[in-house]
Amino acid sequence: MADLDFECITYDWGVKDRTKAKELFGIETARKAMKFHREIPGYKMTPLRALPNLAHMLGVGGIYIKDEAERLELNSFKVLGGSYAISRYIQKRLGLTDEETTYDYLVSDECHKRLGDVTFAAATDGNHGRGIAWAAMKLRHKCVIYVHKETSQARIDAIRRYGAQVTVVDGNYDDAVRLIAEEARKNNWTIISDTSWDGYTEIPTWIMQGYTTMLLEAQEQFSGMGITRPTHVIVQAGVGALAASVIGFYAALYPENPPVFIVVEPDKAPCVFESIKANDGKCHSVKGDLDTIMAGLACGDPSPIAFDILSHNADFFLSVPDYIAARGMRILSCPLKGDPFMISGESGAVPLGALYSLMTEKGDEEIRARMGINSSSLIFMVNTEGNTDPKHFRQIIWDGCDPVPHQYRTRR
Ligand SMILES: Cc1ncc(COP(=O)(O)O)c(C=O)c1O
Image (cartoon, rainbow, N blue to C red):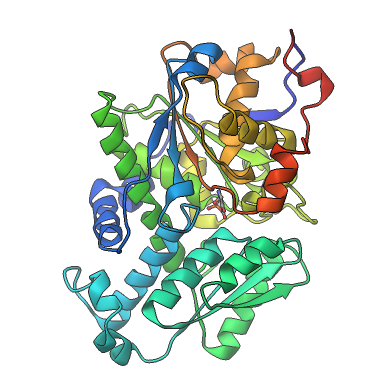
């Protein structure tokens, strides 16, 4: 066994502050998001899959993965945020009550006429843009999506399939975010951004709240398994909106006794990790190409409203190399006998890859003890995407790209 190959920091304000989490992610907010999503034709709960054999092998009580590869037809959880934010935007513009803001009304001719022509716009590294394009198409509005230069053709094609106009920006994800904010001002587009900035927080808050549908589903599914709640949550972060939503939801639900929260990011784009490390309560950027295989997590600027939740509630932050995500993908697609098979993209599989390393590599005993991971731990994570980039997926699963370095391989 080799020493642990990634960085971990513990973050502790002394006493955690759950106030904002309760304000933004209370159970009523999650119920409201779920009510909206349930009305979408084709909505069904995504599975919460248990991996008992892997849990036994790693010495934990249970591993539970919410499989968002099956979310609507979109292969990722992201549509939950974009669609909900658009519904809240229309509700506010037309002055609708909650009861009036039904999916049927939003797609109706009357709603369209009252609203006039709207162009929804977003920057994306793939999944968010696909969700916005899908929602705009359902509502018969225009959609403009900016992607960065490393975005794969498959991801671009998947967005265009829903009728959006896609522009490739010469820069990284954060450059695409900045550029579309400027262009939206000039062209009177409505930005539905999953990241926030100074003066732009309402829509990104709705997006984070939209994600809570999957957490309410998970709690229902846990209760069907006789489990009250997970003891540990491992969640991946790009700009941090997903992690803030997951952690905010559980912190609001169990303010006195929340699960242990672990945030994981690629070491080529660890913007939340670096911001926590700076220890001044502010967001810090990571510059450069951010050329991680975890395309959904390739973000250099944290979302300030998400960071606020994370810095007051999360416990551990991990910054991990790409091979950890690739190993997670291979474990899920070739599981132990009796465990379910799952298709997971690079960003979706990294929490499991990180858990595997934590539980198998030398040097991690101390971190494990600090995290309190042991044979009674019930560990929850989200497979946030399926096979969203088929060529790259084959390169990893079939061709063995991003192999585990020699010193970290399984010993005989
Ligand atoms: C598949 C996938 N997982 C996780 C994330 C991370 O979400 P966030 O940027 O809110 O941290 C993204 C973001 O696009 C994603 O596409």
